[in-house]
Structures are given as structure tokens and as C-alpha cells.
Length: 368
Image (cartoon, rainbow, N blue to C red; front, side):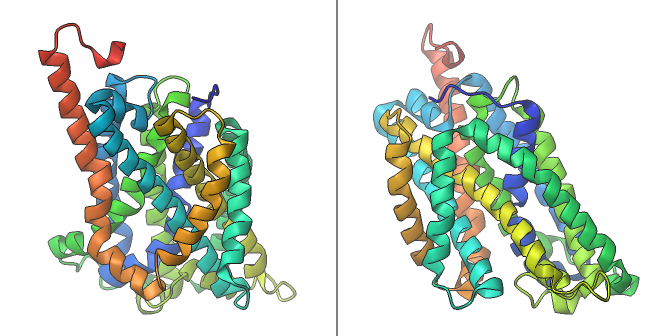
């Protein structure tokens, strides 16, 4: 394992950026199409479920201090069964990296450079992510810190300059949703982004002190910001228009006129927002890299990072055909598939740990 440490504040920023990195681009339109004027309320109950699940991950880590989720699998369930669980987790982290890569490539191709092959974008960003992974988690944490202020400033400026288009009547009629139907139709939000945050369990051993003091506030802050973004989108674009757009926030920036002589603000803003996507990609790529290193007992991350660039690039091309197919898969399978890694496997590991601690004399996972 890499000899590195990150502060509570740095891990808070990592949690925040990992949760919002692609979510605030992709989720608003989908949630508004489902819950209409009340879509801004949805993140609160899903976020509460995400916090409860993260608390469970932290309890599992408390029983296995200093170990990543890969090491917890092998130490709890043995090399055979535990190794199989660990392999599934490693592949899951690689899938998340591929999804983020594809989302980034789709955004570039759709909004900025439609004639450029999407694989060019994939390789361009993945090479930088691989370099970041080789440099280590401390470097990634510092980059997250430095760019987060810029991202926050950009979002605030977009909000302030767009308020001239705000109309409260776009929230009417309010509180008309069928609660249980809305919960069922928006359950995919629980999978993405909240269950994919099990990836951050790879970083728990690097956090100074208790990672829960950063993880839980980070999830709560991301939930509040996602709700605010959806609220802002409804007030500016309205339910009908926002629900028919893939990237509603980009459209808001595209139509923004900060002054008579300032136009095409979306180009500059897109570059800043691409930084947010890249931050999530770098974190996901690093988690995938160290997961494979932990699984196979490798110390040199470059031996994993460089081949992983081509594996993730290939998966990003084949993992979805287009945005329509991706949306259908998301609605049908995201909740079930992501919950397998975020809920089912951690519960199994918790129960397994409890049984071993109770019935095997002298065996304590936390002390081993």
C-alpha cells in the first residue's frame, strides 16, 4: 500500500467532487422528467439512504482498520471466496471509471467537438488520469483542493447572471407527486451516485483519523448542492424544457448573456466543468488501480495504470451505444446492480466478520 496520508478536509473535498462530478450534469434532467416541479426534493430522501449505507461501510472499516475494501474481502472470507469478492469489486471500480470516461467523451463530442472521434477524448483524459494515479493520492487530493474553489465560483456566477430568467410559477403546482411511485421511479439515483461511492472505501486507510468525519458531511453537502442545482434548473428552464435536455446546465450557460459584449460564455464554462468531470475520473481511476494492486500484491502502480488506460478506453466505447440506451439501462438496472456492491456485499462481510469474531477463539479482525 502507498505510504501517503490525506487530511480530513481533503477527503471531504474528494467525497464532494466524486459525488457531484458527473451527477450534476446528467441527473437533473432525468429527475425533473420523473418528479416534475418536486424533483428538487428527491435528493433528500435518496441522500438519507446514502448516508445510512455509508455509515454501514464505516462500521465495516472500523472492524478492519487500515485496510481497503479489497483487503477486507480477502482477510474476511479467505483467498478463494474473498478473492472472488475482491475481483468483482475491482471490476466494478473499472466499470465506474469507464462510465465516467464515456460521460466525459459524450459531453465533449456533443457540445464542443462533434467531428472528433470519441476515443481521442478517452485516451487524452485517461493518460492524464494514469499519470495522476502514478503520482499518488496526495497529488490527487491537492488538485481537488485547488480546482474546487474555481468550480464553486463558476457555478455561483452562472446562478447570479441567470436569475433574470427566474420565474416562481415554474414550480406550480407544487407537492403534487405520488410519493411511492416517485420513490420507485427515482431509485436509480440511489445507485448512481450514492452506491458507486463504495469506491472511496479504497481511500479510507489514507485518511488521517476517522474517515467518517469527512465522508458523511461530504455526502450531505453533495446532496444539498444537487437539490439546489435541480431547484435552480427548474426555476430557469421550467419543467418541460429541462426534462427534454441531456445537459440542462450547459444550455443555461449557453444562453447566458452576462453583458452585451460578453457572449458564448458556455465555452469557458465548459472547460471549467470538464475539470469537475476529470476530478471524478482521476479518483475513480486511482481507486481502480490500487484495487488491482491490492488484489495481486503489486507495489508498482505504473504496471497497472498504463495497461488500464487501454482497457478503460475500450470499455468506455462498448459499455453503452448511446444516451438513449444508457438512460434505459439506468432506469432498469442501476439500482439493483450498484446495490449489490454498495449494500449486499458489505452486509455479507459484516455478518461474516461478526461470526468469525464470535465463534473463533482469539480471532479479532480489528486487531489482526
